[in-house]
Amino acid sequence: MPKFRFEFIEGMAQPAIFADMADRDEAVREAKRAAKEAMLDGIVDGVDPTSWVTKVYDEAGYLVATIGFQDLVAAPRDTEEFKETEEPGVLRSG
Image 1 (tube, rainbow, N blue to C red):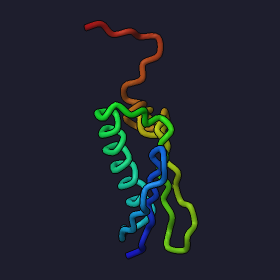
Image 2: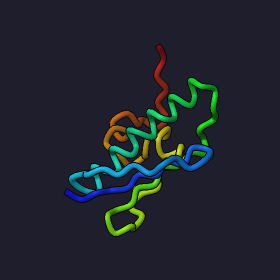
Image 3: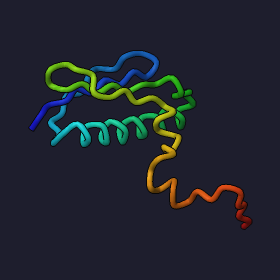
Image 4: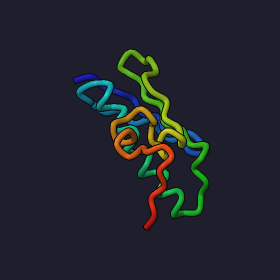
């Protein structure tokens, strides 16, 4: 199983975390999950996490993903989830 390095930059750099993941997609999903959890903890503690960043590197040291606050709070417009709920020009009430 490939090993990935996760770097969490939350105001100041945190120690890197190394984990075995099946592939790049699993590593990115795990990074997003961990970043969301950290950001929620930060908000509860009264910290502004909007500048926090998570970086994922593969075994060779190549950057495979950079995940920022905006990536976690905004749903991508090209996902199936968004397409199902999108109804331009129609407003729903209560």
